Image (cartoon, rainbow, N blue to C red; front, side):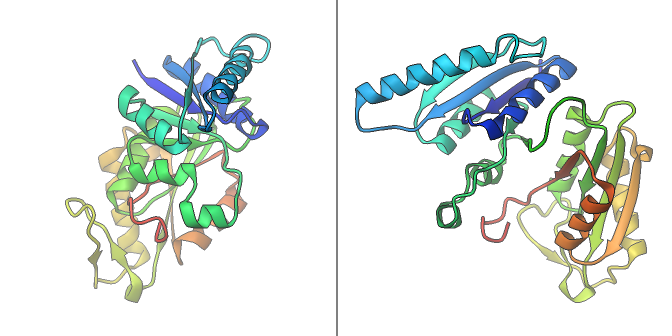
Length: 260
């Protein structure tokens, strides 16, 4: 049976992630665990009080009327460094998907240390779903941002496994970068960039994307394929603005944090 894990800081910004986890657990008939991590403190007495307060807040959240899903989740409260505890939990429980809310920006701290989401994504232990909007219905309009790297192939498989159901719209977009700056990671060369000196034309890029979808998708014809000239970030942002998807799906190469 599929296993889902939602990590929550119990702040209002994480409420949508908890709701989405319940929806997905029902839709996928999956087991679901809710994890909250209490940061360590010097006093054992204060830590114990913090753990009891967290447990007291978690239990009502997974009961009616706040909990609207049919699936009854397990509630887990642990103490420690949040990113480390989440990664340890992933290693131990091996969930198929981690679900989290948006990050609360911390300025310089994030720049120096990285966010929890960045640390979990860089570990590449399981797919990560970041929920930023109300979770009142299933995803119906999904945009996949793809290149030819292994991460994009995994992204297609994850999208079809978790969210692409009958009736959902699916579009795949690829940004065809300049010939002089094109560096692609090809199947069988994971972790190493391979410079291509062939022309990065729209036709060549489109053929590569069609091959990827044919190989990784159970229904490649369901995708509207969009290939555009330009750098990835502005191309993806423009597609988000014009298409207003419910969900953006993309892979990661697992490069260093600054490059990623």
